[in-house]
Length: 405
Image 1: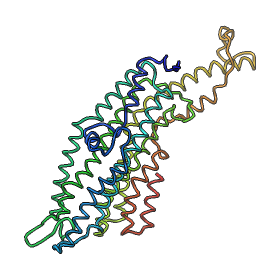
Image 2 (image 1 turned 30 degrees about the vertical axis):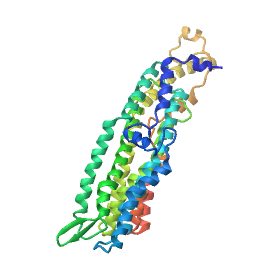
Image 3 (image 1 turned 90 degrees about the vertical axis):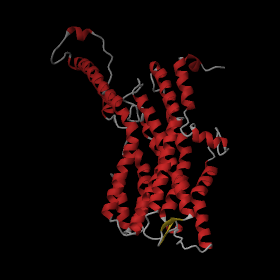
Image 4 (image 1 turned 180 degrees about the horizontal axis):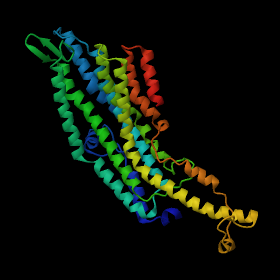
């Protein structure tokens, strides 16, 4: 038997609901299609564990084997691979985190977008525009041009890696320094041509797909929304949207781990103070907050307008009701008595609670409580890197203060 509510919904509402179900943040695009053809994943499963094992083996495992081969063959190279924070952070932790984050991000964003349908929060007249917005997001998600740009930037990172390895002052696992100049080892070549580009590509692809989601939210924010100022969530019914950044905990942790590796190297060389570390962590936290504040800030305008309009409407209605209560209690209005007003029937109603609730309405979906897990994921890798050389009490004191801001 068909659902009467479903049957009564306009075609535009059905179109938006269908498009919402199609929006899977980690699906689509040339790289997804390539992995599907290679049977690394399929439409119903991202095979996260299998892909993590493969990508980490390619990025971290192959250089490790090449380093071992160098040591066994007694070539003049110093095997410092296992003590270098860079490969551990970028090729193992970060790449694993990027792949693992795809499942969490996709599931969370799908639920958030579905809530606009379940509530429902989008006015019937805007359902067609909402479906168009999702269609645009799907086209951007599947963009071959976007992934080509990510690939080209990844290729540029290979050149930067080659230049960096070629300028090391002493021999390392990646390059040997001899009288004839610098010479990259087999592990160094692999990292420059494969491991680092893979890390950069997964990072840029994740950032691009977040920007697609961000633009989708900003388009939805411009639609006519069925918000209510007295909603118990204190956000007009939109608090669930402000919780989406927590789906990116693993992704942020991966990015931070890669950056913290550079900090750890400076620490090993004794070139970083607690003050400098604090500045780095504070600036990075601002960048992370801005990353998620960009899409959420679009809802500030409709929420502010909702609050202002509701307060003005309640205030006007309260004037009528309170004057009626005044007449009932003392027989007349103290000022501006009006017989026509007195003859109009008014149903007694106390608007105090609604008015107080509306005054508490927040126009900011982003706040410390919803971003605290993301902030921790962003800062913990830096704190760990700093604690390797600096007093751990001072480092974790900085971490605590930044998380409490």
